[in-house]
Image 1 (cartoon, rainbow, N blue to C red):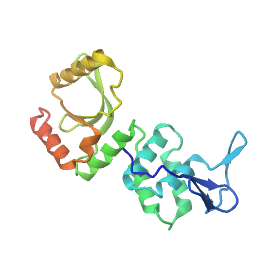
Image 2 (image 1 turned 60 degrees about the vertical axis):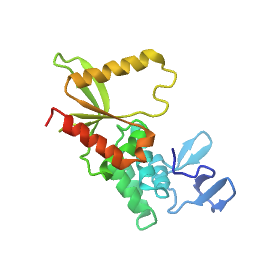
Image 3 (image 1 turned 135 degrees about the horizontal axis):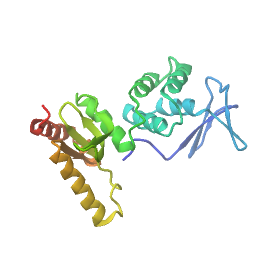
Amino acid sequence: MTDLDLSRVHLTRVSGHGRSRREVCLHTARPAVLDPVEIGRLQVTPAPRAVVETIRSTSYAVAISVVDEALRRRLATADQLAAAVELFGGRSGVRTAVRAIAFGDGRAESVGESRLRVLLADLGLPQPALQVEIRDAAGRLVARVDFLLEQWGVVIEFDGALKYAGSGAEALIAEKVREDRLRDLGYEVVRVTWADLSRPMELLARINRAIARSHHH
């Protein structure tokens, strides 16, 4: 699932003028790139600036996915992104970029998780804890979950289309056992797929039912 037009590649020229062709769009560097990075024989824009230039021309949801991935891969820190966005003060897309940088979280491990983070916030739910390790009374690790609404003990897991591809029956059984152990500890588990992201009110109803069932009130 993507909201981006991937039919054209957009590049910023370190020097020279921009020009457009059917498959490639070259942008003039405004402001000028004063600190290019050399990769082989190429001079490229620094990663924080490249991220900001990308998210200025996208929707908020896509921008979050880009920022989360940049933070996760340590291509840039939040402070570096905040400094880079200041280069474009007053220009189009800056407001979206600033919001995305503020909301970014490198613990999101996929585009789906990033999109789900945005949706949960849009639905008015508290910000969940990400990639939480849940242990039993003996301290043994039971699961590392995508999202946890801690005040209610509700686990939210994003299941991408490829999550179990090629894993076989053993992996599916192990996942079922893992989920049963979470429920034994009093947690409610809500699984979310790509299709659920397009049915936000149905998803909210499922989460609310899980909250109502929870023993963590």
